[in-house]
Image 1 (cartoon, rainbow, N blue to C red):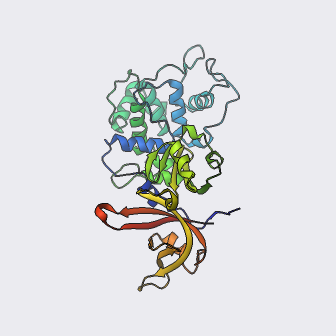
Image 2 (tube, rainbow, N blue to C red; image 1 turned 60 degrees about the vertical axis):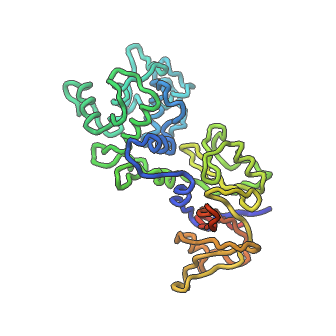
Image 3 (tube, rainbow, N blue to C red; image 1 turned 45 degrees about the horizontal axis):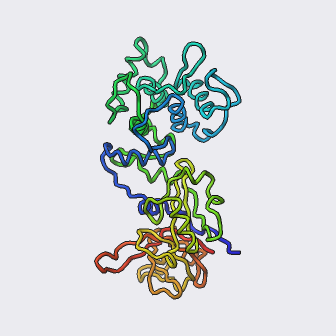
Length: 364
């Protein structure tokens, strides 16, 4: 049986820069916002014209909070008569109500299936930022509305307080929340381990880096389900840098193997197919073979810059320092070792030469 092990840290920025097209554009870029919210696992970004219920919003609040790591817990008690302990919303509703993010109605009901209004949603987002009732003495509703506007939480949301929110509104609201400062002056996204870029946008690469797992090599006769800890039918897939279907990834596996990385919170899978048998002109690929040579530049006899594989006349560039270390005299990779190279592929248009840059590798 082949034995696989990772011999270098995943170069996440390179993988995701190539695997998920990203440009730090203005905050009005809705596609960027959707990508950030999807990767963060706060909510599903499909069917964004649908109205959001109070139960769904409670779950979003938990997924956007420090309680996210326990968001899959079940509640053993029913806090509200219309949210039984076995409800899919029970834990989220219990957490949201106990922390003052949302409140119920007279008669001990929560109304989880009722559509949420902007006014109700504002209370929750401001609470995540650290604001309490004491911060809005007098006119609580008016004070929260003023703070909501002051913090730009309403950017790209054209709704009045009593209007119902759609998924698109919530995508914008939670993105704006991630960019806002909390009551102690920190960007809220840092609470979740993310970062803002220089232009004050949430950097998707920091989300991926925070949650990324892999690489895992899945052979032709192995099940994808055994390598990923969530339902693949609910996942989003990228194959060799492009969005794809589960069936496309399964088909790629029949050519020998695929290399997988995944994000648990967003239920996203990035797969790279075996280029030697699958072929194609993708922007990313995985190439297997025996190391034939490791080459160094004339300016540094300690840092390798290219590697070659037996029976292959191409040179594979080593640019990332972690990858270079793995192929150096101090690393594990030597001539004669079997390896899978995960590569970014550039060039090739108009008859030009293809260029291959190794962004990760797996010894087997």
